[in-house]
Structure formats: structure tokens, C-alpha cells
Image 1 (cartoon, helix red, strand yellow):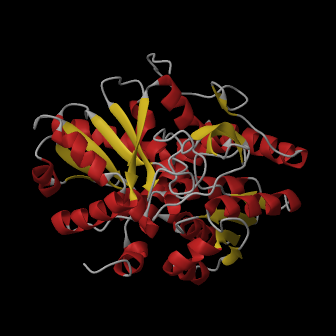
Image 2 (tube, helix red, strand yellow; image 1 turned 180 degrees about the vertical axis):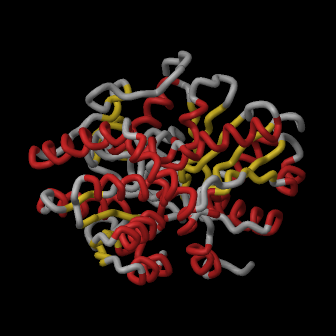
Length: 407
């Protein structure tokens, strides 16, 4: 692995971060992706676009979100001061609304009246259904049957908001399969349909675009921690599925080499392929990801010895995905960010600990970051600071956790 200073992390004009990213799609999607890229680049330079976007983030979504000093978690860890970036307090309950607002404005700007989306944990689906209701757009959300089962509350919320939720029974019936179906829909209906992709993955310009809309998290966190402590944190810690909440937190700190960037993948229930969703995992010869192409982008992908996409497992629907966003792959290979894993059991421990010590019930996705953060904090002195991105709240997961075992 090459280790060198990174002062910025920007893709080239074709959407590549080094060897990662790019656009690997059927010919029928080249023109709509070109159209989307051109419109996004124009919007990116348009102060009127950002004026409306920022107003909605403030008045509709609830930004800025606070940075909360978790004193009881800090005392439990016995080391660095732990702060929580409270994305769970946003409208709809997670960071996904940041990206949904930005892309819905793009869809309206492009004259697209029909919006499709994929969802795993359901939070992106809820966020998309929410902004479509706000803007009067027709909304269709694809969701794997397994995720429909374990996220029934979010399915009801999407339908209540007016979205059509289509259950996907193909493959592993999780996020990967929902994305496949959404892409098939888009190929067929490109003229009037906007694909509102939810994470920092897929073909260019989606990884760049999603990061742009989510980097408000890191910009706020940077300003807030400097205001409170007068110094930068020693570490930022966030769960990583596709990677949007993590890259949103990390990006404004990339040039600050003294700040550790730590992504936490889903360690699932074992080391074998199919038992976890840790793309950078190297615990066994056959258990980790390899560089490959999935759903339009080159990144690390969990695959078998024949190059077939491997099944995955995570207690959290939002981390149950075979690949990771290309910018994360670049940050991993360059050594700027480090990626570790937390098991299902550790996620459950973090879920309960945060609830009991801070009165905050985090999403199961977010919960993966809590126990690793406690270990990092324990290794640091009391005058240091770390930030956990509390990317979503756990209302959607309470019934699932309640059914697992006695409290």
C-alpha cells in the first residue's frame, strides 16, 4: 500500500480516483449520465442552486446538526473526549436527507417528474419519498425482500409519503439487488426519470455528487469542534456501507494529516465469504474483497474465486453490500484512511451502550462505529478529542433488536 500525503481527493474528468471509480455502464446509460454530469457541474457553480439547497437544509431538514459531548461514553472509555455529530436529529432520521434534497433539486432542474431510488435500511427510500412529496414528484423505490422484512416501519413510511415501493426478490434480496432493478428501470425510462442514487458509489458522477451533498457534515463538524475545543480532533469514526456518511464527514479533513479517518465495515458473524460485508477484510485468504467492477464503478468488491459477486451478511440492512464507494477505495490504498470492522455482536453492544449511557438510540449501521470508537478513545489521553458520526437514529431497528434476545 502506497502511503503519501493527500491534500485533496478529487476525481479526474472521467470520475476516477486513481484506478477507482469511472463509468462502466451499458451504452444506453452513457447519454443520461453525460446529461446528469453536465447539469451537476453547472449547478455546482450556481449560487442560486446552493441558496435554495442550503435554505431547505436549514428550514426543512434541521441543519446545522449539533456536535454533542458524550460525557458518559467518554467516562466509560476512559480516554479521549467523545463527541457525536447528531445527523440522527435531521428530518427523516438520518444523513440521507442531505443528498436527497440536493438531487431532487437537480431532478426538478432537469425537468424530470419521475424519480426512482434504491434503499437498504430504508432511510434513503424515506428521504427520497419525502423530497418527492415536497416537490410533487412521482416516486418509485426498489427494496430487497429481505430488507422489506427487517425494515417494515420504513416501508410503511415510504408508502405513507406517497411512494410506490417495489419488492425485489432476485439474488440475495438486499441492497445490491435493489440497485440492479433501479438501473434496469432507468435504462428503460431515461427520458422522464431521474435516478436518485443514495450512496457514494455507482457510475460517475454519482460518487462525486453524493459526496458533495454530504460533505456538509464534515464542514459543520470542523467548525463546531474548533469552536468548542479550539483544535482539530485526533480521529473521525463512521460506519461504512457504500460510504456516504463517512465520506461526508471525512472529506473536509482530508488535508489534515494529523486527523485519523477511520471507517468501520460490517464484520457480520464470521470471517468466511458470505458471513460479513467487510470489503477491506483480510482475515482469511478467501474472505476479503478484490478490485473489480460492480454497478458501474471500479472499487473493492466481495467476490468468489470465479469473480462472481459474493453474498454478504450484516445485522444492519444499510451495510449489507458487496462493494464500497470508489473514493474510499482510493483513501484506503493511499493510506490516508483506515478501515476496520465490527461484528454484529459488537454493533448490538454499541447500540445498547449508547442508549443506556447517553439516552440516544442509534441506527444499527451507526452502532458499528461505537465500540471501535471507545477502543480508539481509550488509547488516547483525556485532552484529545474524537468524533463519531451518529448518522441515523435507531427507531427503525428497535423491533428487530427486541426480537433477537432478552435484554
